[in-house]
Length: 299
Image (cartoon, rainbow, N blue to C red; front, side, top):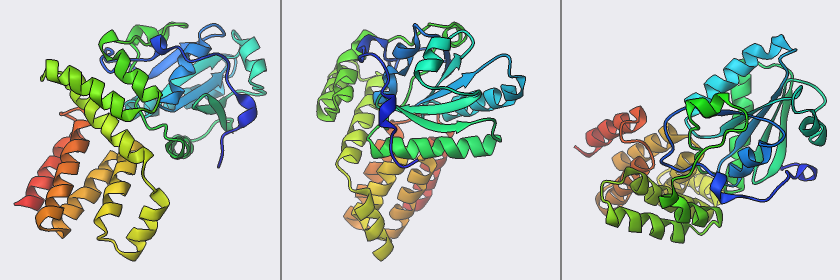
């Protein structure tokens, strides 16, 4: 799975009103769609990967896979959105996308369908295939996070995530890949309301995406191979890990760099860690654990 499959370009233009806002209510990252609502459900693929499960209630052997995919998706907390399609009730869509058997699982990155697998897989193997999709998405700069749909919308075909209009301009800029403008929009909101946790996270996320978009991962890998203490390369790799959901790896890499550097370089790493903490929920166990490790490394 090295490139996206170009012949399966998905239908419809991007409608910003269908994108989920960072202030969406807590809930599931799994939604059920039909022929009419499919396009809207996958429009967020310009910001985050979308996983599609084509299934049939007439194939009970895939029930375990469906449960595993839902569990993996909600555990991932926004690294992707899972869209479920019943091929029995959405036969036209299944035909258009050339779905020959169920279960079939595919990804969507920037509006392009990426075939993943047919048939049932063990949970760990399914997780590994999804990680391949995330790595591919990162290569195309699709490193945002999906927002949860409400519990009701996860169970109702056709329901869509909602957007808080306060953040529309910022996410409009994100979709244009104008991360500087997105950061400015979030900073304006944060200035007006310093306690706005969503705006604070938006500033950090826009900054992260801007750095990732301008980075050279291959060069960073080569430089680290030659010199594991190359600070610029360490920062690039930590950003890439954070942007692709490998947040624990990013935190560990930077804490190790705090331990191995001194003076101004150590402070640069510390500040980067604090920025990455802001991309997450303050109570995220990974953040809390890393903060303790950072304190130990500093003192």
